[in-house]
Image (tube, rainbow, N blue to C red; front, side, top):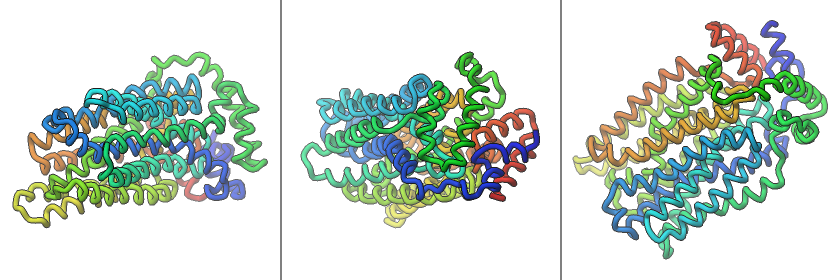
Length: 500
C-alpha cells in the first residue's frame, strides 16, 4: 500500500481533505464541538486554579500557622501534596478511562475534587489542609488524563491540535483566575480558606454539565455501542464525511476487536513503536516540568519577594501579570499548533525559555548589589519565560500525548505519561525552595536552563511532527520509525499535509 493511497483513503487525512476541501470542519462554525470542548476543558480550569491558587494562599497560610511559617519542608509539602495526589489520580485515571469511559472518569474526578475543596476550606491545622490537597490532587490527576483524550477523540484531525490546546488554555486561564481570586480575598477574613474553597465551584458546574454530554464516540465504538457513537458524530460532521468516518470506525472496530479482547496492560511495552511513542510523549511531559514551569507558577510571588518586592499584595499583583502572559501565550499557541506544527513550536519555545532562564539567573546573581534594577530584571525574566513557554512547551506535551498512542492503549499510556508529568512536578515543587536555599536562587535557575538545553536536544532527536495527521497515520508513522525508515515516511506525510 502506498503512502498516497493511505492519505487519500483515510477521512480527515491531508490527502482526503485535498480531494474534499468542503468537508473540512471549522472550529467556529461548529458550536456543538465548541460546547463539548468547553465543558471538558473545565477539568483544565481545575488543574490551573489548583496549581496557581496555592502560590498566593501560602503567603497567608504562613501567617495563620506558625509551624508552616518556620518550615520550608511544610511549605513545600502543602504545595506538593496536591501533586502527590495527582500522581495517584493520573495512574488510576488511565484505567478508569478505558474501563468506564471518558465521561464517567470526568464525573468521578469532579466528585473527588469537590470533597478536597471542602476539606481544605475547613482545615483546622496544616495536616488536615495537606489531606485536602491530596484529595484535590487526585481529582486533578484523573482530569489531566481524561480531558485531552476526550477532546482529541471528538475532534476532526484538522483542528485536533487547537481543540486539545483549549484544555491548556483553561489551565492557564485557571491560573490567571486564581491570582484574581487571591487578590480579591486579600482583605477578607479567612483569606486562604476562601481562596482554596472557591475551587470546588467549577467542579460542581462541570459535574452537572457532564451529565448532559455524550461519551467519546471512539470509546463507544470500542464498546460496541455504535448507534450512540453515530448520533454524536452526526452533530460534528456533514452527511458525506459522516458516512466516511463511520465506515472507517466500523472497519477499525472490527479489526481491533480481537486486540481489545486480548489486551493485557503488562504487555504494553513489548511493541517497539509503543515504546518510541511513550518515550516521545512521556519525555515531553517530564521536560515540561523540569524546565521550570511550576517553579514559576507555584512560587512566583515568592520569587518576586526574593527579587526585593516584599509586600504580599505587590507580589500577587506582579504575579498576576505573569499569569496573564501565560494565558495570552496559550491563545497564540492554539493558533500556531495546527499551523507551525508541534515540533517547530516546541523548539522555538525552548530557545526562548533558555534565554529567559539565563536572565533570571543573572538577576539573582546580582541581587545582593541592592539595586532595584535587578529586582525588575527578575520580573522581566519571569514574564519572558512565560511568554516563550506557554505557546509551545505549555501546550505541545498534552497535545502530543492525546494523539500518539494506539487506540487500545490510549487511556493507559496517556495515564502513565500524565503520571510522569506529575512525578516530575512533585520533584520540582518539593525541591525548589530547598535547592534555592542550598545553592542560591541564581544557580538554581542556571541549572534549569541547562535542563532546557537538554530538552531542546531531546525534541530534535525523538519527537516527530504529527501536525494534521489522523490517528491511523500517527500509528503508521511509529511503525515506520520502529523499522528505521521513519524520516522518509514522515517527510512524505508532511508533504501531503502541507498541500492541504
